[in-house]
Length: 230
Ligand SMILES: Nc1ncnc2c1ncn2[C@@H]1O[C@H](COP(=O)(O)OP(=O)(O)OP(=O)(O)O)[C@@H](O)[C@H]1O
Image 1 (tube, rainbow, N blue to C red):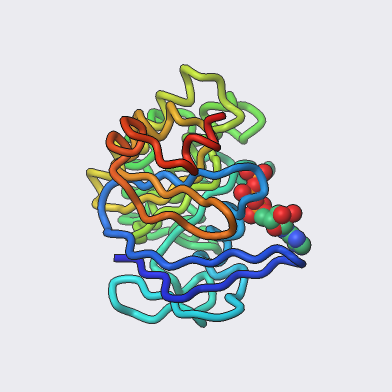
Image 2 (tube, rainbow, N blue to C red):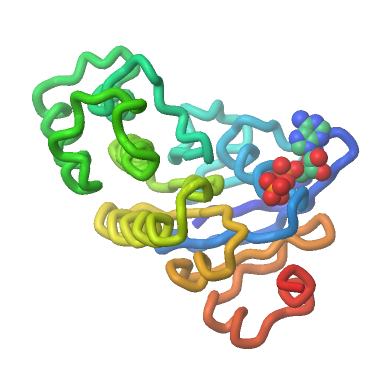
């Protein structure tokens, strides 16, 4: 369970209130208009933005003041954050050791993840030498390899075309399920939420709506979802 208790986030004159109990397991989509605070919320959960007030717990542990690296989560941004001078295998290996001195066991785990995301045989290439979709796979592989209980994704596949995006979402759903990771994913696309998200949270009027089963929400949209869909 990821719990946000009386959280208030502030960025300049923007404020967001968050009060939610998010069950672990499965995929939760986070939706809302541009500028509604989706990235701000993810940054706060990841520990990059201090909360103005409130308390945040993950699996019952208070993480409100923990630095990002000590939180039981990984975060993946839209620009993938691959280092251009490192190979795909090295970029993925960073998930385990920032100094890249992987033990043979860690090397095996890295190769298994590369294999899982369909990058077997491409580990020796640099990011510029693989396609955009393969870069996305590498970034996802690195996040998966860290094996943290929660995976936060800030529109990581939005630069991809619809077919590739769908393929990445399916890969995400299957691998997260196999690894037992819980996913919180920002998306603008209702079809992405409908395709893979067990539940959806909408941000509206400076606050989070309670999480709802995605099927139920889209079958009978709340006024906030209706306003978002236009
Ligand atoms: N560093 C900052 N300083 C001041 N205001 C900021 C800062 N970063 C974001 N904001 C403001 O905070 C609000 C929320 O921004 P945020 O990026 O979280 O929205 P978002 O829902 O992720 O938007 P989008 O869908 O367009 O990516 C916006 O009004 C934005 O202008």
